[in-house]
Amino acid sequence: MNTQAADSTQDTLIKEKNRVEVLEEKADQKPDGALSKRLKAPVHIPTDTVNPISKDSLAKLVKFERKRVKDSVRNELNKLPKHVYFTFDDGPLLGSTAIDSISKAKNIKINVFLVGKHANMSKGLKRDFQKYYNNPLVECYNHSYTHANNKFTTFYSNPISAFDDFEKNEIDLKLKYKIIRLPGRNIWIYDDVRRIDLQSGASTADMLYTNGYKIYGWDVEWKIHGLTGKPIQSVHEIYTRICNYMNNKSSMEPNNVVLLMHDDMFQNKKGQQLLSSLIDSIQNNTDYKFEFIRDYPFRY
Ligand SMILES: [Zn+2]
Image (tube, rainbow, N blue to C red; front, top):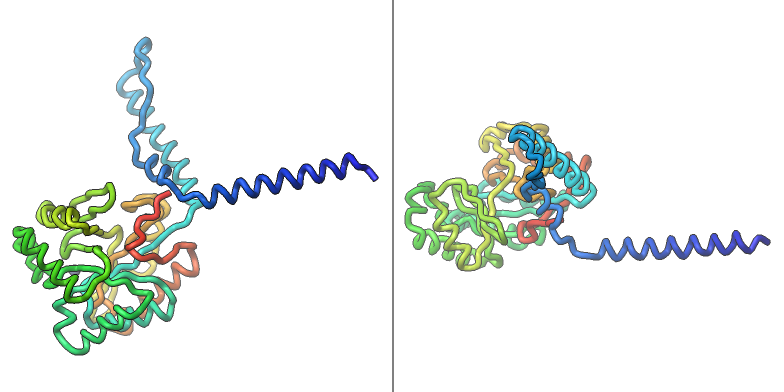
């Protein structure tokens, strides 16, 4: 028997075992967000003071370098898990029961930003709220008690009364998480992020954040006419938009895409079928995971 060959096979096996162990150890490490940081970091080109290049050439160089970094980070991020967040605003409303049933039928996590005033409008809506509340696949968050009575500028012109309105909602609906979406505003304040779309609303958002709340906006919005079930954007359009945000790393956080919908979009059978069909498209064609906003963002 060729003992040398046996030895080298043994060696190879040991090496392979070590390699696998190292890889497993790496996989166990919590991601530190380095890739996300690199994606946003400004590009630095070392300047040569002896032979300075023209401004034009430097601009070209920066542009080239930025693209190179972005492409390489994008390649790395594409190998990592991707997360999608379905968020439904303004419930409970007609449409909420259907959303609740669809989340169970498809076995996906969803997020609802609730309005307490709606839950107190009728016994039926109270019951729909309870369904959400008791469904482990649904997480209930805060969208204010009155929804600003749809007079947003007036509502946000008094941050203290606006703050109280969110607090009232939290108590009334017994909300477990200090997670908010502002009515009528796409404002994000959490961790190291603060992005404001309209200045009216910023003081209220800051005050909420200072008091332990996190405020989340959205990357993509889907609009369907509630009564007719006619979509402004087709399932294909909205599916493509979600994928583009995921692939181009253009969402607020790369590999995390937040979709905004409204409960009243799904009061009609047609609308409900569109929602089911969007979920099917994602489940059949992508490896995206449906997540709770509480876990947002997954940073790699
Ligand atoms: Zn709303």
